[in-house]
Length: 205
Length: 245
Ligand SMILES: [Fe+3]
Image 1: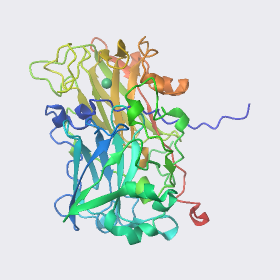
Image 2: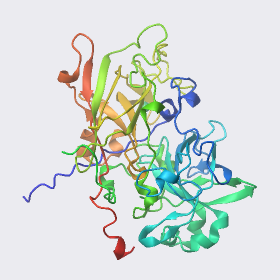
Image 3: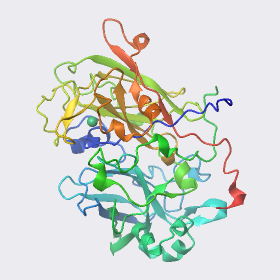
């Protein structure tokens, strides 16, 4: 036997289950417990940039909306800076801008609503630039490991042409699954398809 | 062991053999909710190695005490327990100042949730959620009551073992994890379809908290220990940067 490498192994994931709201959004579960629910205000009052609203649904393999889903978003500000110390420019982020949000689907319609500001382009690898995007993490009953994907914006097609991540997607038509479609001034639509035709591209990050 | 996590490189690739597959036939709800296409593996950029931060200002004083944090007329009913442990990374280093959130059923197996219709009663003094931030050593603890087992619709007679749902952030969005804590000695663990979505017995064992008599409070409560391991990272930033993609 060779020596042991002595790494620990990551704790296994388990589904968030149908009652994820109790822990992460108790107001939606039907009661108030915490003084302050987290992730309700992604941009804060002072963020520069375009205030946008993204609505959509998460659809299962039968085309039905997933009504007990929880989504978390993580994004840079309008200047493409993440509010995190590992972003070299993080001290420039506006006061109150967290870039992180938590939304749930409506229990009846399955619709979720993300209110934020449109992120700017962020640094990619090897000096490249990533097109504006919101990182999305999706958990629900029946989802065994949280799913990672990205929301890009339809109108940024020039930036998409050189985006390293988009270019990893071999089947060209699948790239469209990452595009939020403009539905009006400052409003977008973005559905996530968990399975089947038009299945959203998910990432192993 | 240094206290501060100074590893700033890329995260080790997630070992998917530790995790349940998206599609697990025995867990029926996963059947229509599992992607069929392969995940696309992407190398870390700033988008993955950054993530939200939380501070003590975000939390209330009783947020980690589920026996008291929804108490109206008295303490929550049930077997009083402490759940404690450390959040570590795969390098064995503590993950300090990270948010840990939990939620659970009450001692009778009933959730305080408008969609939970199980016939066990709601405990008027138990909300069922808590949260805390790890200290400099990655240590956290909660006080709560041991949740009850409850039936669920999978097979006709499916029961969840007693469990606490646990959500952890780490320092980066790439570390985000939700899991469930089970209790040592529970005979329902072996029978649970959700537990058994995990293909690796060591990985299952890693979700079972042992009884920890040393950490309990005599004449008050028992304790269970639950360490959580998040993805580790390389020691230096993007050392393969020049090799391209
Ligand atoms: Fe549960």
